[in-house]
Image 1: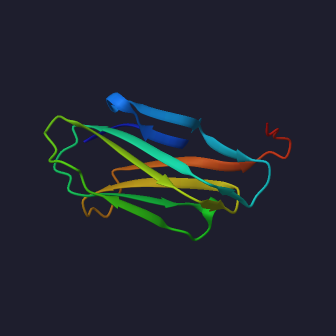
Image 2: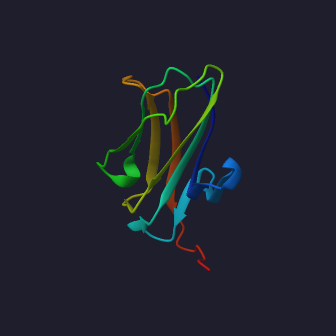
Length: 133
């Protein structure tokens, strides 16, 4: 398996023709005017190449920005995976209470492995001068 991309955004959905729409993509950080704050929805998108022999995927979300919270989502492929194929993993989390400046860490586990195949980290910070339009 080869990780190709992880994208954190406000929204992610599959459109007609199997196209992906991503809205409100976060680069390295999610910036708030002040904390604590609530995100009504946070979306996670991942694409993998050579994705096969996977019976279960678990996404874990943790980090100093959300305190002691340890969220997990599990999914199973909707159809048997062929060798050399691609896979997309999409989840939406919400609402999510962000308590502190710090990090959000998304870990991707395959089957029942104890170590993640991939870890994606994004920072949470504040900017009191942030203009919300």
